[in-house]
Length: 109
Image (cartoon, rainbow, N blue to C red; front, side, top):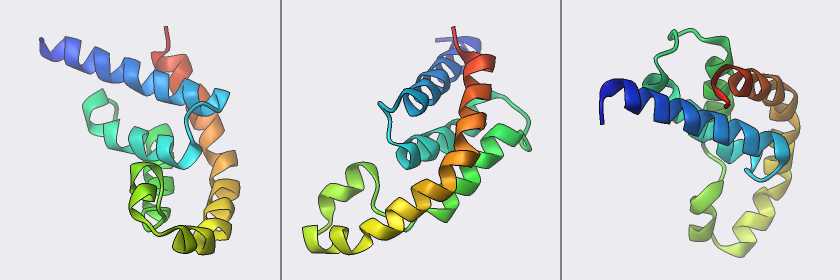
């Protein structure tokens, strides 16, 4: 795979994640974390406002059990953190959705 093909595949992945967040098939916090992780591979400016949004959300929520990490937590601990997780989702949603729409517009097919 050439470098250009790699960047293109990462951009397609970013568009897929953004689309999933927007249509509800990808959990918001998990998707923002994945998008933040892709930032460097996409060859966008370091200070890209969309990806800065995902980095901030990911950073603010990095102590919360999201995605596969949830399976390693005890059910009572998850239940205790659920209000904090819901609060984080409520805070992140109005920030993430416009950035997801922008990513989809830029990199979507």
